[in-house]
Image 1 (cartoon, rainbow over the protein chains, first blue to last red):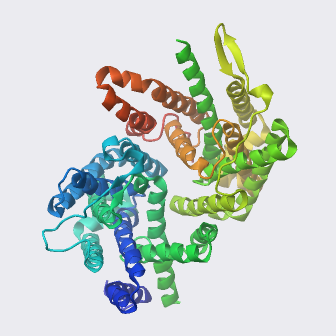
Image 2: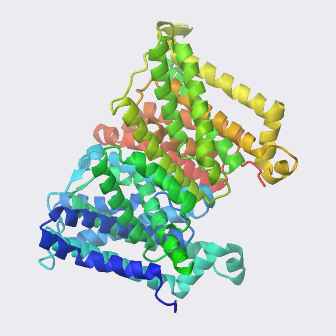
Image 3: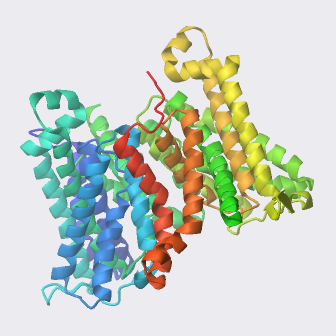
Length: 315
Length: 305
């Protein structure tokens, strides 16, 4: 950790500074759209950062992380539907529901390894998707419109764009800080040790599955927070947020930015979503460019953007 | 009773289709150790090729054969241009790269064929019901799917177990460095296997096309099912894929057909009709979760490395 400020750290600092100053830019230029867009980006960056905790540091390739976006979102949406508008109830419920879901599927999935783990997490997420599609009372396939955003008793007004943006950004930075603390704690070191050499760690006497499970639950809970924020942001939640391609998007963000780096997923989310936005402005067929681009990144850009930066600095 | 027979046949037909898709997936995984999410795109391309060629030639069989060849060619090109460079890389890289390919194929199809789906009409001789039991008719086309898929499964079995190429494929699955060292052109073998897998996916796609419509993203849902199949069957095992595909096909079809009535016996009819569709969609995922919890390597794990 006691290294001189490298290119990747510099980019991380610039990234955070840019995100903090964005509302100012939006105010000055009167460009409201950019703030709306970045609110979404920040929320998905939060989801990507939570995925990175298990994928990058824990070596657990979850292909079902979008399920938490849905669970967090539905917790907010369903409570709002039932007339409970207070964010002080909605958000804790969203987090608790995500944690419980993570605990259940984690304790089952973590019995498997490698591709089997990728597939079983995917299967559970698909199950969550179909459950949500079957919730006729809450819109089923069509999704659920949230008529009133979470109410935080005047403490913060979510309908105010700037306030909501800063809430999301604070959550993102808080989660990244938390991940940083976790990764450098004894617990985090054990989890990373398990990624490198499970047998050896078990021989020393660490209960592998229990450590992984706790890490898995923490990550899921963080992503549930992103889900709750996302639902408030779009005023809408539907099974589509849990669809497997959404989980794929999150994985892409993490890998694009740099797996196992603190700010990589945040950078990945910003770049991925901005690219999507820019390409879709250039051409309707943006995915035609995005697809091969991903392929090229995998083929030539090992370690994602953060990896590239690290290399160029050393060269 | 006849309804049960019909649904069992439907389940068998669906299961065999799944097997065609899963066989390619499990071959590619077992031999090249490649997770190919774009397999569903090949399925979709098979259907689009078929719709185009059938309209062009005016003959269903000829069009289907051309489409099969085109998908095989596409698979070979894809392997040569992109996927070849992914062998030996991390599974996560595979997931990401082939995820990119899905985006590409979906968009390419939208560009070439337009966003609306295509119809693939059946010829008259396949569109009639045939009597198979006294008083029981079954669509000729669905029967044809069962026959063709069973024949392909048999050919695949004979090809892999009884021919020289099949021997090399099995050898490559158990130890790829060794057969390379023995002087086998492993790159050619890989390209061949991938092309074969692509053709099987294309076949599944073009056979399913007349039942559903040909549309963008049609390969994605079924791809997930195919993954469920190979995970249940044990990755790399063709026999496992076959049995698991039939199992998944039957459970999915029978679940959708009979679960609503079954639930109505225990629940009120309103809550049963809302819960049933979700529950029957979940059945196979539930099955997979149970299998993985009990046997984390699938039902018939292939012995590799």
